Length: 78
Image (tube, rainbow, N blue to C red; front, top):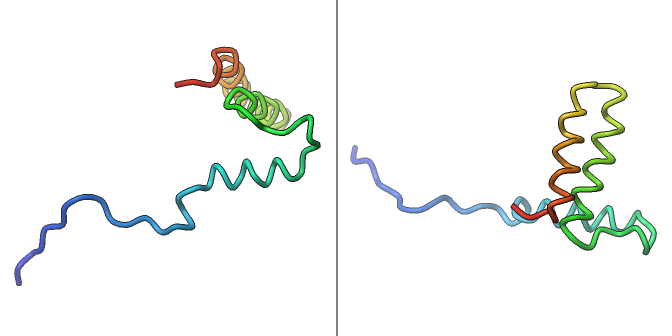
């Protein structure tokens, strides 16, 4: 039996492509208008708040908190 070579990457199902934007959309629906996530910096600050709440259960999450704050201070860019 001959093996077929496929070039490129396999197709990604549509429901798996925009998870980050869907999560942001759900959060924006739950948050008041003045607290919505509009920029990458806002998203990093929200991540810092979530890491802070997890710190009470899992203390090493302080590292994630520090990372999120540093990324937010830099403007959220890579």
